[in-house]
Figure (tube, rainbow, N blue to C red):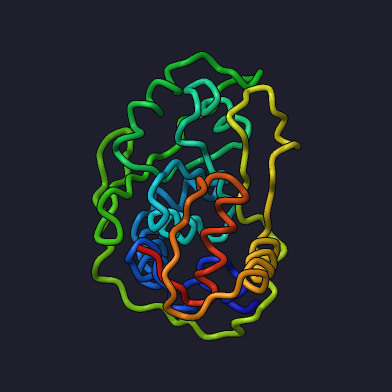
Length: 238
């Protein structure tokens, strides 16, 4: 059995850091609980990747944990509707973790013609994380499912804190360009992220509990890595 700390969300939770004033471990635990309590989300993810359209870094951790180790497509919150539609279709994302503020943008995107050069697939499930880590809303065609995330049990975070990470896809970062081929996107495995974050931590060491303030957009590879690297040292932000 592989080490659970070889998956990025659990490796971060084990370090007991804080992001924007919120403890990482409960955020990750909320994502795991969401996956356990939302069968429609599990069914959706069984067919492909997840996607993330968020501006709040703590919610990204919930989304990564709820992606169940699958590759998450990090979408640009400033992207055009046609670019979002294209990227969702080409990547085959089956669930989008987002907030209510982005629902109109996604509705506009999905109201456009098929842009990927083939038959349009079914729409992804939308998972709204506005109230995470307390609760989440899963938007289904027939109803809105309210998922309680606040009564979960704590995570069992036992394993090797220096585990090199699974050599499986973790995130895909793509620019806001319809013309960009999927092959040109930046893809990072769990191993890539953990190794690069540790390298960044060595280059700019931080002590546990030290405050930091992520400044670069987390949908970019640089911003994603820069924000997570301090968390592996138990740092705090906010």
